[in-house]
Image (cartoon, rainbow, N blue to C red; front, top):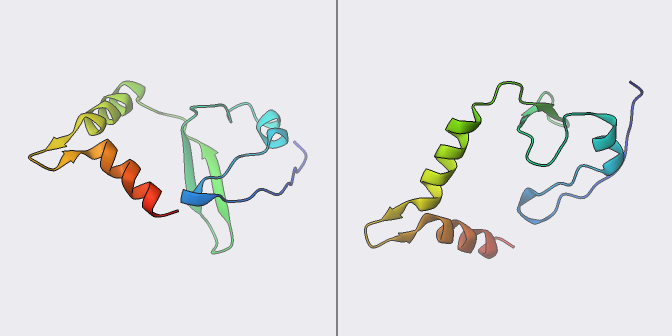
Length: 88
């Protein structure tokens, strides 16, 4: 595989779009793909496919967190959305 390099902008809330040329060059960079993100050096971020994902367990945890309601504290999902909006 030849080296591909391109430029992207990190948006609000740390969102980064992987350019289409990079996504096309690797078979695993698809929507909803689980990835591992790590730092090797202070000036480097490495993204790798997460090979072994227990999807049933992951989605069960996501549903559980989304449905969480504290006593008199409201909905956790609504809190997270409000918190993200306040960080813009």
